[in-house]
Image (cartoon, rainbow, N blue to C red; front, top):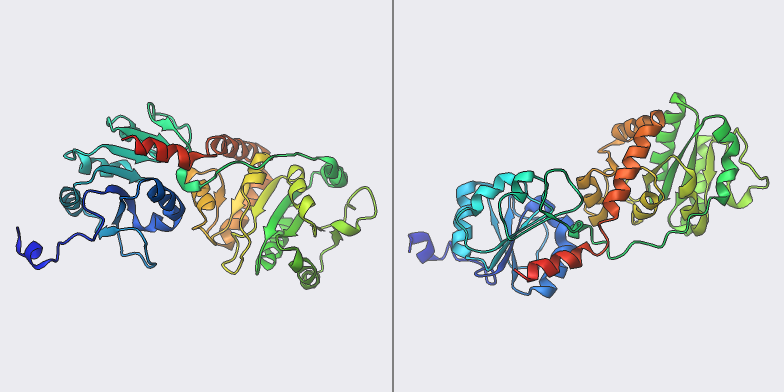
Length: 358
């Protein structure tokens, strides 16, 4: 026993010794919390080895933080003597640390072919990826999608945009926006129509906000048609904004547009939960902003590369510009997202069952 062990400085926190040890980067903790909670319900002796800085929020799971240094991590493996090791979303460079471990290893959300070929007891992926055979395609348990919503595609309202389609104008949908997000939508739309004329569909998520948001939007002086008050079959060609104030058309209009900017991701003030599932199921490419990246579904979709992620207004505009320019790119991104989504429902339960068998 070394001096530090004798003095207690190297003492492991309660619940870590001999645990089912989940190894992940500290910055992934917020994304992983819902899955970790489910995992611990099935495997009560779960503990965490966090690589990186100390977490800023409290953690209700036994854990240990270690610097991102090979010898430090390896030393902790030896001391913990885990029952099983669960590598969560880590790159292949951490594989060398496991060469001496006797515990069975599950590598979840693997993205590198080297991991699949390393002979671990379990390797899973979030989607079908080249070179990762024989990894099991389980879906991403961190996305926490229990089931996909029923999809009822209704294209009846799409005829309203007949004149815009005949004039080769694009339709961009800011769907389910929350607090402080509509101003961003108008700023981006104004930039986009200076490049090529189109129409913005705008639907606040909270119906109680619709009237005040509409009154505030008058300052932008853009020709606006309110969904409730459309008195003709078609939206007039001079219309710049189609404003939606009801829950049902908010979902139905996904079928009509070229791309979707997900509300709830554009501003930290927004309390609306982002909806990525319905636009992806409708086959539409999705753009997300920089806010609320700790949302499990948003974080998983970004990691999988099935949405366009923007860190600021300039990147948001670049993504909008690119999707306006290229219908082919819109199709490719939408197809990739639907393929990814097809693997996700129930992924957390599947992965936990597989880990429990190790």
